[in-house]
Length: 178
Image (cartoon, rainbow, N blue to C red; front, side, top):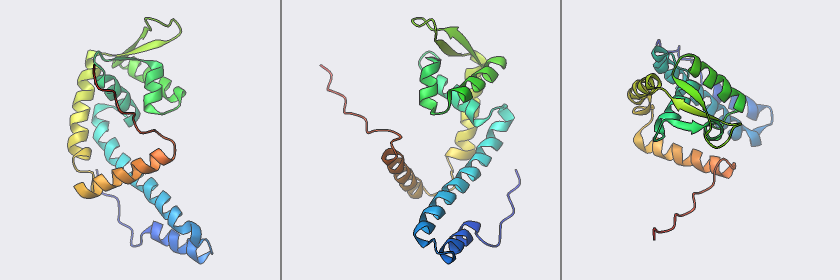
């Protein structure tokens, strides 16, 4: 993948300058933070997409396969997948339809709920997600573009933001086993 052409000026810094010049100084830092996060996401997705392309996977398809691959038996109710992936049910259904069409997972009736479906990872789905995970680890996750200390600090800051935004709650302590 060719590196993008570097701009002579940071457009986000220029946007901040314009925000201040237009009298929006109280919003300038927040605008800069939000647009910086969005641009960083774009840069990371470009790396992820380039890494997953040889496997014929989008990140959404990869996430679904990886989620199922983490389960003991490679299966989970569709409703649980929707909740854990935190995306709209229609998006999950479309992803599942494509993965099913490609033979990477299957749908089975839920054993206890006739209205629900179980998603089941196939052998070829498991093999593909393991290879794709190895590539993502090597090409993206082991070297995200930040030092280890910066990576740890960034995750800490974003986790605090997510928690404060209601994305999750602190896990409750587990009772000691009897």
